[in-house]
Each structure stands twice: as structure tokens, then as C-alpha cells.
Image (cartoon, rainbow, N blue to C red; front, side):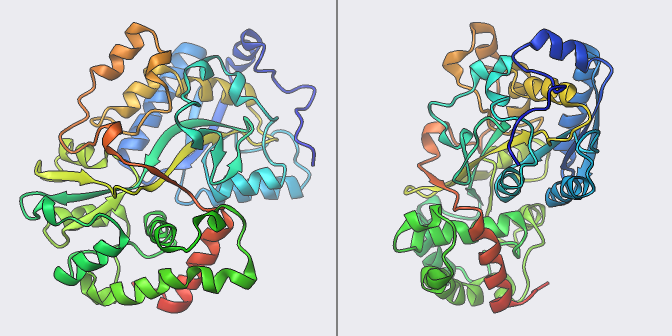
Length: 393
């Protein structure tokens, strides 16, 4: 299917017409609903959209973004090319790749002509235009940045002993048996751990930026699984069980059951401290040679019923006001996609006024970014992990 807009579709270059059409529309935003603070932020965005633009926002809470993709796939198969049930999706990685490949997204280029695109940091954040190696081409609008960051409690762990890469994490686990683990894939954080370790140990990292080649898959991933074979007996409960997800790991760090955990949000620890979930002695660290980094987005299905309202919502989400609120650890702590030097003084002051918290590393302390592998690697890695280690929990 050619990715073109229908004649009746709103034209984001004519923003006044988009605003007029959006007024009175209801936008069904399909977004992960597993976090109270994120849900509260989306509720705030909905209230602002209603008040400012007359757009009603309904948060359709997902436990897996693939479910929203499946809805659009089913509607296309049924010939429902207009009036679809999904107007906006919180998305990235393999789900974006799938929708792009199947021609399920609203016209190319809409994101880069939104009024507030002018503030987006495309110069220093390359994953805004390349989602897990797939060119974005304006088919989705950036919403936030993610980077794998480790957390520890300095009241219990000497920072001089912390690991600096995958190999030294294994050495640290030998010296501290039972004090580290990771969620069982396909949990997002657990799967990210596999990609981090593979990216560090693979002989040629560039092979991960292309689709999996069946003939060489086993050889490419051999260092990862040799590593896990050695690590698992050293983990929490000797690798016979796994933390359910990141919130479970956070609780285990708070309870003193584990000494090192990790997340995909550099502000996560400070946010947890602010909310009373972690002690104020928790701190962050990354590996000096890099950790996984990506951008998360919002996308509009090709058959969305309220495209104008979805465009207005996407633009509001990259406004300096909405981005600054989202980066506040007391609200969410999700890093911005905007460039500070593109903002006016008043908007820059919104960000400068934020207290990022004692556990948040500054941008120059986060270390290099490692690109996410091509989306085809995720399913293969998760399948091979399950074949080798079973379902665990």
C-alpha cells in the first residue's frame, strides 16, 4: 500500500484548518497503562487539550502495544479504511516497523511539519529520525527519550566496586552472588538487558543493525548465551526465578534483596526517591563504553477517525510546556526530545527550574548511546532465550 493521505485527510501544513477540524473530536489514544504517574500525566494532557483546543482525549490503557497494532491490522483486513477505532498510539521499535511495513500509518512527513517540531533536537538525538534502525520519515512524532541506566544504593554498595561493562558485571556477580537479576523476557526491561549484553559482546556490532540472517544467527548470539549460562547461577534465586518487571526490581532494591537494578529512564531513581519508593541514598551509573538508547513516539493509524484531533494532541505533546512537565521527576521524569538552544528564554527557564534529583545523571554523565538492534532481533532473541531457559516464574 502506498503511504499517502486521503483527499479528506487534514493537512498539517494548514494548521488553522487542523485546529478547526479538531474541535469537538474525541481522540482514542492507545498507550501503555501500567504506571500510575504516566497515567496521571496523560490525564493532565487530556484536560489541557480539552480546555485549549476542545479535543477530548480517551486513554485506552494497554498492557502490550502490539494489541493496538493488531486492532488496526484487523480493521484493514475487514476493509475499514476510515473511521477506525485507534486515533493515536504510543509506539516505537518493532511495532512501528510492523505498521510502517504494512502501510498502516498516516501520511509520510506529518510529524516534521507540526508547529512545535521547530524545537525538536534532531541534531543531537539521532534516534528521533531512526527508530530501531528503521527510518522514521515523519510517520511518528517523538515524545520522549530513553537510555538504559543502572541504580544502586550507596549506603550498601561502594561505588568504586560497580561494574563498568558486561564482563565486569559478571565479575561483580561472582563476588556478590544473588544480588543481581533481570526480568524474564519478553518483559521490555528483560529483553533490553539481552540486547545490551549482546551489543557489548558481539564480534561485529554492525550486524545487529540489519535484519537477522538465519544462517549466522546462532554464531552471532553465541557470546550472549555463553555469558547468560555463566551469569544465571550467580543471580537472585540462582536464576531459577526472575523479577516480574522493573517495579518488582525497584521494590527488591528498596527491600535490600538486590544491590544493582536497571531501567530505561535516567530519571527513574530520582522519581522513585521523590515518591518515597526508594531511599535517598540510591544513585545512578552507566557503562563508560555505552548503554542502549532510543526514542519513543506517538503515531496515527492510516484509518484513524479523528486525525485532526490526533495531530493537535501530538503537537501539544512536543510543546515546551508539556515536555518540561514530563521531565519533572515529581511528575514522570521522562527526558525531553527538545533542544534547549531552540527554546526562547521563558521556555528554557521551565527546564532550568527543574530539580532533576540527586540520583539523576546529567546529560554529559550518561555516556555514549548504543543503537537498538534491528526489530527482527528482538523476537529471535526472546524465542531463543525461552527455548534455553524456559518460562521461569
